[in-house]
Image 1 (spheres, rainbow, N blue to C red):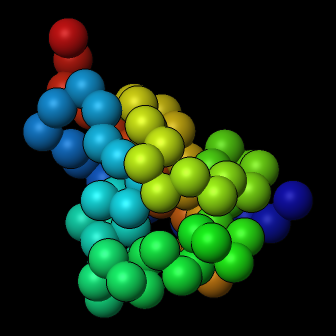
Image 2 (cartoon, rainbow, N blue to C red):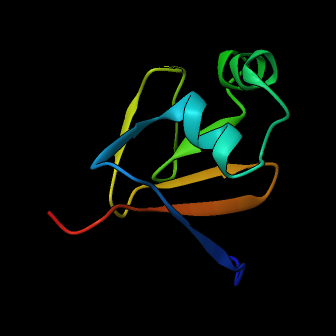
Length: 77
């Protein structure tokens, strides 16, 4: 396993959808790019490829694209 930095991405609510997180974390330019990466199996959620743009992400979930990993940081309930 690599020693890469995992960037925390704070979100406002308890949940965010995968496509939205990719944009928020500046991993993609827009929704079209997000959809293409997801459709082509280039996005991993918690270490596994996920092809659902609407996948719900919660506090602690990680997303990896092009070797960059971010972790969802939701506010305390």
